[in-house]
Structures are given as structure tokens and as C-alpha cells.
Length: 212
Ligand code: URA
Ligand code: SF4
Image (cartoon, rainbow, N blue to C red; front, side):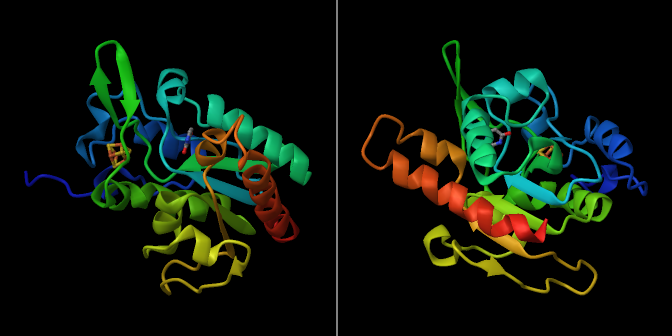
């Protein structure tokens, strides 16, 4: 068999989230499954009206099998609360569903996924978009934005507006808001730019909320 180039062979026809998640546990669409503990698929159900897309699971998410349960998830929770969005109303997922890292001694250091990993994992995101059919998608950071919009974007150029880009005919796309990744906000904690960065994230979530 030729080496697979993406997740397509593992994506079932079903659009039940439970079926998608269990199939994703078998995914070998790229090499990232191997060193990871497990796939981190998503949280939230199909009734969610707002879909938040992150980059990839972090160390804690990889161990727990749940997205956004670590430090970046806490920042996101605070921002959602501040924006008046209940976490239950949101569907949380990632552009890439396995944790990419470098082992340094006992520590596992986050390694940014490459464009080819984002592309390999994209069939899962398509299936999730069909399954949940959200009113709006919030892309958290550049990797998520690339996955959702299928083109490279600069956060600073696209944030603060609702992007209504049709997307390819076979994949109609809901309105998209691009914002900073909560990890980028977290890195500023205790420093000058933190309040502004956090307010920016909240502001972008507020922008998305009416479409949810
Ligand atoms: N960062 C992400 O992008 N996703 C997670 O699930 C956790 C941290
Ligand atoms: Fe499959 Fe995505 Fe994991 Fe790669 S990162 S093995 S494409 S689920």
C-alpha cells in the first residue's frame, strides 16, 4: 500500500460525532499518532452553535484525551466566560488531533505542527463541520486559521472582523472569526501586554457570539 497522505481512509461515512471520534483513534494519516498517547478529538456536541478550533493538543490534553484542559484551556475558559459564552454551547476541537512534541529528557516540548500535518488532519475538521454545522467558527491562532480558511493568513490582518468567505462549493463554510491563540495570551501573563491581549481575545469571541 502507498503511504497515506491524509486522514481520508480513516474517516467513516457516518457524521455521528461518536463514530468520528472512535474512528480517529485508528487514524494513521500522518506520523504524529505514533509518539502521542492518544488522539484528542473534540469536546462538545452537535447542538453547539459555535466551533472553536485550536492548533493541536498540548501535553495535558494528550494525557487526558480532551482538548483545552491544560493552562491554555483555562485562559480560554476565562475568555469565554467574560464573553458570555457557555462552554457547553461551544464545540472545541483542534486543527491537528495528535500532540506533536520533542522529547527533552523527561519533558515533552510542544513542537508546532507543519503545514503537511494540518493538511493531513483536515478531513477530520471537514467531517466535524458537517456533523456540527455551527453558526460560526472561531480559529484560535494562525495554524487553526490556515486549517479553517485553507489559506495562510496573518492574524493581525484578519482579526477583528467576521470573515464571510464561501469556501469551495462542496464545503460551504460558516462565518469565521480569527483571533490569537490562548497560549499566546498566556505567555504574556504577568507582563505588560497581558490585559490587552486577553481583552483582544474576549473582543473577538464577542464578535462571533451573535452568529452562534
Ligand atoms: N492548545 C490547543 O491549541 N489546543 C488544545 O487542545 C490545548 C492547547
Ligand atoms: Fe490522523 Fe490527524 Fe493524528 Fe495525523 S494528526 S494521525 S492525520 S488524526
